[in-house]
Length: 310
Image (cartoon, rainbow, N blue to C red):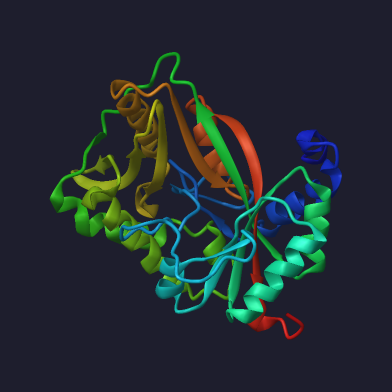
């Protein structure tokens, strides 16, 4: 059922579609995080969606500095490296050539990089083939969805603004709610560190990094959250989760609706959100609320310290 739609990704789409199908199928036996409801693979939804950071949730610039660039190809990520206790970098371009990947590998050897992130365009078969040959692991599909803020927005009576008393329960929800991300999928990242990453992320968000944190209540207690970021006419949703014990109650849809109303009231013309390709449940909630797919990109990790030939 997925093959035909994926052929529309571009002129060389079939090679890319094979990779996309691989990622989607790889999640069949795992739990999926989505908004609003809880599901297992083969069922329907669970309660989280997220941006694809880290985006330096403790503050400061997103990407670190301090190492020379490799002809503009690679960038050292100071915050990620400090947080995970590894030397982490990213490729700065969305497409690969034989020359650029060779330069990147030399730079990573020189600077003893452990893990190299790569966010690739999904419509370039050459990039996909070069990534595969060079031991890049496909770890996620990055789906960006958009909403034009037109039409009616559903009411959200269970949602209110963040209060300081919400801090502890929201951190607890964050630790268990974002397990569809590429960091959990890549087993080389320690699970406890991934839990702590999202706890730090929500803490930074309600500490002022996000423009708004909206909280869903159930029985008078915090049951979920959504974070909102404002820019010039375009708002974005960051973290989004509903606690496992409070799923299947429509809270996820109310959180998204409340976020849309917040963006509308603050003059935004469009809203974007990023979620995972394996997170079908989350995609359905966003679609229910009027979001449409804007783009699909591919997340890769390349581990040089696990690759003797690097």
